[in-house]
Amino acid sequence: MTHGMRTTTHGLHLGGGRRNWRDDAARYALLPLRLFLGITFIYAGLDKLTDSAFLKDSGTGSVGDMMRTVRDSSAIPALVDLALKSPTGFGYAIALGELAVGIGTLIGLLARLAALGGALISLSLWLTVSWASDPYYYGNDLAYLMAWVPLVLAGAPLLSLDARLHARRRQRSGGYR
Image (cartoon, rainbow, N blue to C red):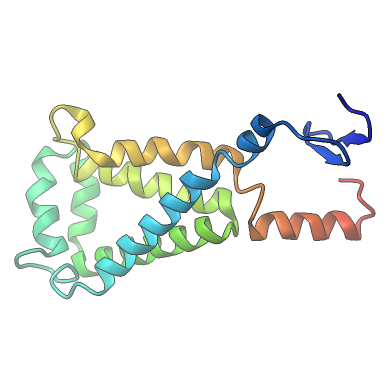
């Protein structure tokens, strides 16, 4: 039923008429995932930045000791060796990366790039820190990696700064985008 509606090239119905609740559910389907990943990565980044033990080269709870512990069981020991050249620097890089990814994902700014960053962080942690998890699905980094994939593909098409910027560009160009 399209009486009183116009359909965009994306199949979304605009203007008058009733929308099916399934259409609304489909449009907002990625929003809970975006909120969860954004909030979780912001929390993870802040947690690392405020944990004085984590940001040390050695000692209980330090990123250095964690990297030394997982080195021989990781899929890519060379990646761990790279982190061990400056454990504190690596700790800050991971924490700030998680914070940037979380903020970008939550507010929907450069959302695909933020999601790609989240996927790369999750991939690197899966291949190093949680690689030895047995069975493999006990390592949560693989699940996070898979959770990032839909956001890499779809971005943040609504309730995001990306959507606002896209609408503004479309408006300025006369709506022909």
